[in-house]
Amino acid sequence: MERRRRTALRLAGLLACATVPALVLTGCSSGSGSGKDSAGTSPSGSASTAGATTASPTLAPVKYRTLPNACTTVTKSSVTALVPKAKDSRGTAAATSEMQSRGGCSWTGNGSDGYQYRWLSVTLQRFDSDAQLGSGEEQATKRYTEQVGTLSAVKGFTASASTGVGDQATSVVGKATVAHITSQNDTVVARSGNVVVIVEYNGAGLEDKKNPSASTVASGAQRAAKDVVAAVAAANA
Image 1 (cartoon, rainbow, N blue to C red):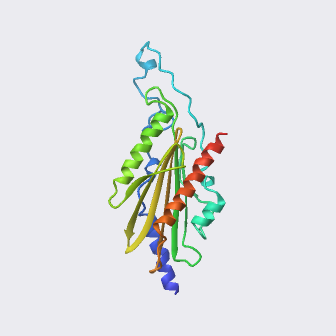
Image 2 (cartoon, rainbow, N blue to C red; image 1 turned 135 degrees about the vertical axis):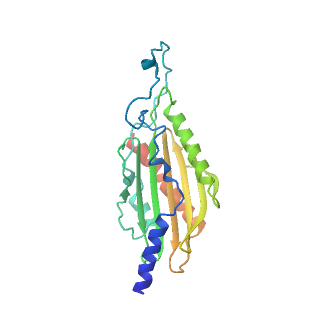
Image 3 (tube, one colour; image 1 turned 180 degrees about the horizontal axis):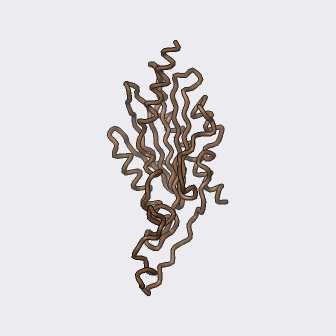
């Protein structure tokens, strides 16, 4: 039994590295909320540096000016329900140097019996209005569209519109197989104003245990996504 349990834990670790690649927001640099390049300087060729006399267009103010701590965006009750016996119920924060424009957090666990693997991940990115890049909402809409396109292009995954999550949302569903273990996955990409949210949720039964159903995983991803969108709004109230 102990040997089977160790095997289950090893397989869970492998599955955590094989999820749908939705966390592309974490390391992206183009269109970040700062409107600066990777060196922290303003983009060259702006009206001020080029000596242009044309006034910059007036951009609408952004809806959200800050982001909440990503690890607090999913309620405790949701974490308990979606990731039973999580290794750390407080979540594991993603490394970031720009907490006002991006953040991430994840939870993982193998359930009360050690054979029901679950993984939940949240990624957020906020955009500020920029004379060259456009309004924060325009940039967020562009990023949202890019993320949906990237995820839905993965073989075996399908996308469908989601309702009741932010201004627009899409659910991308499919299965992934690693080391002969197949997990059920659902990723919700949502946009609320000038913020893009990605919630990934997947589960697998280890050691021949039954997998969670597609509907169970989908409802879990939706629940977490609604939590995150609500948390962004609350942080800016």
